[in-house]
Amino acid sequence: MSFHPLMVYDPDKFQKSERVVVDEGPPFELTPERRAKLDEILSKYPPDRKRSAVLAALYLVQEQQGYLTGNGMKHIAPLLDLSPAEVEDVATYYVMFFREKVGRYVLQVCRTLSCALMGAERVTEALSEKLGIGVGETDASGMFTLLEFECLGACDRAPVVMVNNEHWHECVSPDSAGRLIDDLKSKGEAALTGCHLEVER
Amino acid sequence: MEPILTRYIKEPNSYTLDFSVKHGAYEGLKKALAMQPNDIIEVVKASGLRGRGGAGFPTGLKWQFVDKKTEPRYICCNADESEPGTFKDHVLMERNPHSLFEGCLIGCYAIGAKVAYIYIRGEFYHVQKVMEAELEKAYAAGYVGRNIMGSGFDCDIVIHRGAGAYEAGEETALIESLEGKRAQPRIKPPFPAIAGLYNKPTAVNNVETLCNLPPIVLNGAEWFASLGPEKNGGPKLYCISGHVKKPGVYEAPMKITLRELIYERAGGIRDNRRLKAVIPGGSSVPILLDHQLDIPASFDDVQKAGSMLGSAGIIVMDETTCMVWAARNLLYFYKHESCGKCTPCREGGDWLYKILTRIDAGEGSMRDIDLLVSIGGNIAGKTLCAFGDAAATPALTTVQHFREEFEAHVREGRCTVPADWRAANRVVSHAH
Image (cartoon, rainbow over all chains, first blue to last red; front, top):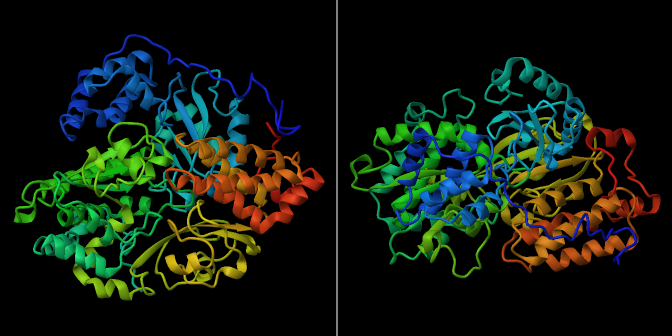
């Protein structure tokens, strides 16, 4: 059955409903410092509205463990007067939370129109080829994950690549993207200095 | 016009408290605290300040609607700048955060709020860290917190980090996200002015809107209104990106024409190519063509021309751009960012993307082009928030202005833009 000969009706690829369960992961507890940070954040919201701190709490879990697991969400739920399902509800909506193990460096390439007009697709292709992975995948060494992100909000310095939800690199070309990979492999975190605050166009 | 909002952004320390105070920061707040809150609302109304987030709704009116009989009340600053092509709030927060803090405090005083939540998008963490450090300094210096500048007015500012959701920029979805839920919009009415954050009266304002408050309080409503055309007063930040020689944020009154912005301020089209299409207000607004660019870049004039100023994110596309590819690129964005609450947007966005993929890969039919228009028409205006209209717009407006290009794709079974032009922008893809 199909509305158009070329519109594929494939129950294995589309139109299927599955319950995707977040991986339980190893036992999890926030470190005392992060627990204190969470308490400080909670004090900024009304005491009966702890739920407002859920994004901050999820960031703390992700910072400690690298990604979100079922146990991580179960740990923070009672701290926010929430059920684990309510935490999972939020965690599955926002794009910056990873629910699977990711590489040490998550490369987030902006793909929306202003960056695409300046060749962002070329950058993604170059990274994909250099690392030998497709978009959404992690390379064999477990060091790099390649993701496409939507408009990062620096369109005058397109194309833009964000790393680990924090470090920005701008005016990226296929060549400079390749160099970024090499620098990350040799220098590690010290290579994450491509933000315009250090490089003006 | 001398820049007002971006006057010092090229100075290396423009974001620091010392520099800002030396150049007039918190003077507007001092003057406001000596006025009556209702008088401030009257001044903002008289100035004609319109929201800079995209809707252009008069700010004074929005504040007037806030229910002043219910406690507590809130100001939410919408710093979730995610509209494709827009990056003005990024510059303001990075280089002039104290004007934002000052604007939040003036707003809180005007509507009687005790705390302003700045909802900043998660991807702006490098900006947020600087803002948090500066906020701490402002607290220490007595500009925020208890008994501000000895006036007896208490107010807090809280910076709340988002986590990557374009829909969180919609005012009720932002409130939902601040409350700790999925960023899905609420039905309006009730409007946030009556029942917003935690069901209390709330005013949600854009970063640039709030940054305009100190100059308005200091220099007066007539000054502000006189800077631009009638009902479109004040300085405006324009974000120019795409195929121009000098992309960036440019400040100008709204009398400046789109042509001047693109050809004079931004240096014209790269490689001296021909301009093909311009999106004047972020990807959610209709396209304008070359012959339509001699209009003032104001809310009213751009609307009269058939588009909207929106967030003033001007995306310039030259002749090397395939419009089918551009529409597909934007529809992927809308399909991805749809919150999923309303069926027309959730399902229709995906259908529009699939059809555009087929046409772009040369596997479409003539019927597909009509289908785009039909589906788009059934999404726009039929959703809880303006995202539906925004999702339908790229498909509808590209078909309206470049129908021959769509038909050529169908007839020839391939993208009809020359191969070397395609290579500069896009990768050839196949329907999936």
